[in-house]
Length: 218
Image 1 (tube, one colour):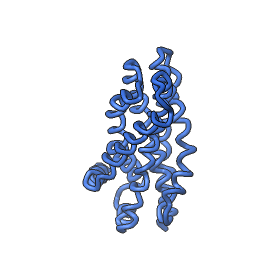
Image 2 (cartoon, helix red, strand yellow):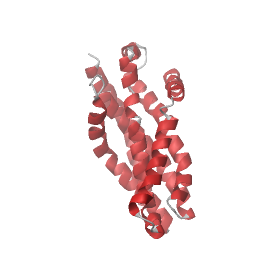
Image 3 (cartoon, helix red, strand yellow):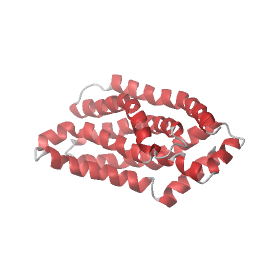
Image 4 (cartoon, helix red, strand yellow):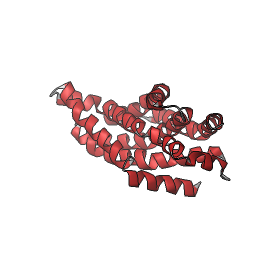
């Protein structure tokens, strides 16, 4: 599992599709949204947690088709499936690599982009904390969606349609943590629910992803 995790990290860095693509997309969303809203600074600050979370979600979604599709195209996925590693471990390792190359960079740069959205300084820490708790769920749910469409031609759009509804609870509670923290309200309930979603996803979805991979690789 560790070797597979390191291999996926190296491939993501060499291809440039992990760090660079997701960060560039996140930056573009945050820059373009204020143009659509208009020059209303107070409104920017009020909607910043939700906009930043939507941008992070779409940036994570952009790189999901790389999780299994490239391995399937070059023929290495069947070899990985027959290796002495359970497919549950393969799914978990690939989700972890996706989070390190996509989710973690978003956590780091989010406060900087919060400045562009006029997010109050009190919200920077809460925004980073909400992304740190929520992005593992995005990667794990996305890995399950990528496993569902392995072998499907042009399955990226289908995967997006399957995964986006599953992202909604994470988006709601993640943005709520950032919003409540920024406005000085208690964040205990949304933080607990956000953490529960991530822990539940990491605990259960590797088994679901492994099951659909076995079916798709027959």
